[in-house]
Amino acid sequence: MKHKLKLAAREFYARVLFHTGLHAVVNAVMPRRLTILAGHCVSPSPSSEHLPSEMKIDVHALESILAWFKARYDVCTIGTGVEKLRQGGGKSLVALSMDDGYRDNHRVMQPMLQKLGVGATVFLESRALDERRVNWSHKFFWILTKLSIAEFIHRYGELCEDERSYHVANQYVTEGREDPVYQFKRLLKYETDPHDRDRVIDLIFAEQGGDETRLADLLYVTWEEARAMQAAGIELGGHTVSHAILSKLEPAEAEREIREGRESLKNNLGSEIPTFAYPWGRRWDFNEAAEAAVTRAGFRTAVTMHAGTNRPDTPPTRLHRLAIDENAKLHLLVAEACGGFALAAKFGLKLSE
Ligand SMILES: [Zn+2]
Image (tube, rainbow, N blue to C red):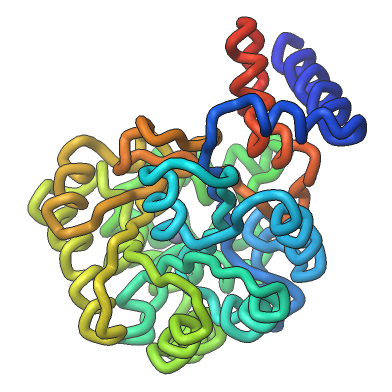
C-alpha cells in the first residue's frame, strides 16, 4: 500500500512538473546534472521480436524523448557528459546509453540519432563480437520461442543437477505464479550454479536445433558495424567479455572479464575506452573488488542500473542511470532530469525509484 501511494505521488508530481512547465524553473534553480538513460534494443527489428518488452523501446518513442531533451538540454555521450559535468557551466546534460551491442542499435537507432544530430553510448559484450557467442540469457529467450515455460522448466528439471532449483521453478508454473518467465530467469541468474545452468541451457538449446552463431548474428553487431557506429558519433564502452555477474566471480576472474573486454574494444576500435557498464548493473551484481578492477583496467567511469541523476561529486565508478523501455514515460524522465525528484528529496519526499 505504501508503495502504491508513493507511485501515485511520484506520478502526480511528475505530471504537474511536466505539464505546467515548472520543470524548466526547477531545472534552472537546481544544480547542473547529468542524466543517463539506459536501454537495450531499439524496435521494430526482427532481432528483438522474441525479447521481452523491458528490453526494447520503439524507435519513434525514443526519437521523441531525445528530441524533447535536445531542445532543452545538452544531449551527448556519457564520456562527453562526464567531462562537461566536471568542467562546470552550461546546460544540464542528458546521455543515452544502450547495453550489450544489439544489431538494431546500428540499423535502427543510428540513423535516427544522425537525423537528430545527437550522440549516444553503446556498451559492447566483447565475446559476442569476437567469437559470435551469446550469453545464457539469450539462449533462454530463444528456447522460449520453441517451448512453453512449463515445458522448458520440466526439461530443465530432467537435466539439471540442482533439484532444489527445479522444485522452486516448477512451483512457478503449478502455483500459477505471475510472470513465471521472469521468475525462472531470476532463479537461473542468482540462485543456481552458473556452470550447471550453462550446461543445461546449452543442452536444451541444442535439442531444439539452436545455432549459436546464427543467434549471435541475429542479435549482435559485428566489429565492422561497431566501427560504423563509432564513425557516426556513438561512443562505445566496455561491458565485460561474457556478461557475467561480477560479484559472483572470483576476483581474478572478474578482473579478467573487465580487462579483456576493454582490450578487445581497444584493439578492434583503435581508440581509448573510458566508459564501462556493469553487466546487469544492480548493487548486488558488482562489488568493491569489481569496482577497483574497473579503474585498474583503465576505465574512468562506470555506470550502474540504479535510478537517479549524477552530480560532479557522484562517485565516477557508480553513476546512476534511468532505465527506458516500451513503457518509458517522458514526464517521469523529465522529473528526474530537471532535478525535480532531487528537489522533493530536500523536503523529505523520496519520490525517485
Ligand atoms: Zn548488459
